[in-house]
Image (cartoon, rainbow, N blue to C red; front, side, top):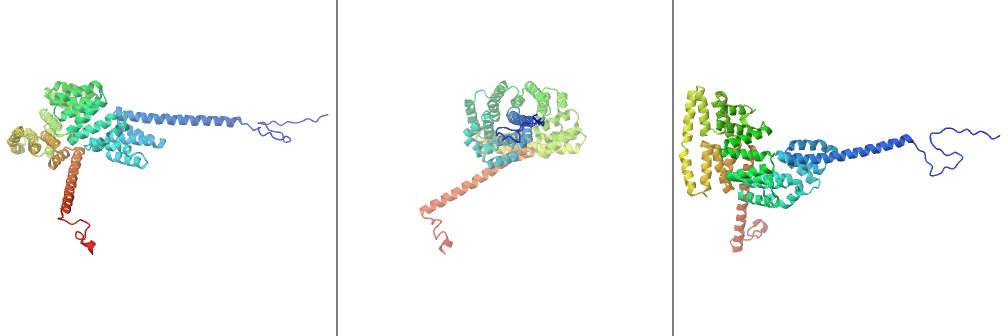
Length: 480
């Protein structure tokens, strides 16, 4: 009788102890296999999610910066996702671009330095800073590197060309701006931004008809762009086409309802069309009029005065006189406010001061007559601009100063007066641009003086009037 063999149940295939194990036999565990598969799927899903997120953040940031004009949202998005994506250099560069659009120079500088330290090519690392400096009135480095920058900003070339044109205009080099615009037209047909900057260039030259046509072409190519509509509305105001200006400002108000320049522009249009009540209604939307430029603030003050809001108007006139204590129109505004408030003594005093400012008018008229026969005399234009800025019409006076500055960008007095104007108006960015221009001019004058002195010494050495600088005669210490 054969003995019964008892077989123990096992959860896996095992070799009998008496048998020699085959090298290809192994133990299989179904639970472990399932975990491995799930882990692999999870890893693949995470990689796919990471890649999708990476692509979405980069693409959406590009659109927000260059197409939708929402750089703050782009910067916030890039900063939020950057730590999870190992802070790619491409994103850091986009962050610098977003802050360039926001005008935050310190952050752009810091990011550019970090990118350069990480090994990014110097031109690419500093390109946002170069464009920012160019737009502020220092276009030389962008001009010298125009080809590489256009390649670097592929599909966004107008960013480079816009900064260059803006820089030439701010520098007063209208010829350089015109040449850049011609190049722009040759490289890119029917570019709405090129048409926009043609309009800005024409406005700077006070060629309002050309500006009007250029802004209209820009709008026809890109109907939803804000800037051409804004500039077109201002040109309509300047040409006293108030109904057309009103239409443009109403379009802008649907897209930028809280923008002070839109509110005041619409109010000015309504006031000139004979609707003071509607103009006053618009101006009530302004949260803080004290920061407005003087022409807009004067408009608000005048509207409130006509609407019998005399106390408010008087407060606004006081702000204007803090900026321009001798300006004729603002003295008259406050004098009228005081008269309406029953402050007769104060009103008469201000009217007397206004008369003193008015006495400068004949002097300005004589300068205008001189310019008719001597249009190239920029000193007359500068001095006339100074008189107008301080006593008669600050915005009009600064216009003459800007023309004088473009004709002679190295005149320190003109640059100083422009810096003063923008500082009083609360525009520190433009004021700082003119202060930088003053420092550059002073440095250029020092460099020229040093070069002239070195050339004079060299000529004296060659003629024998001076011994060579390394000879014992010229250096007694060397002889000792």
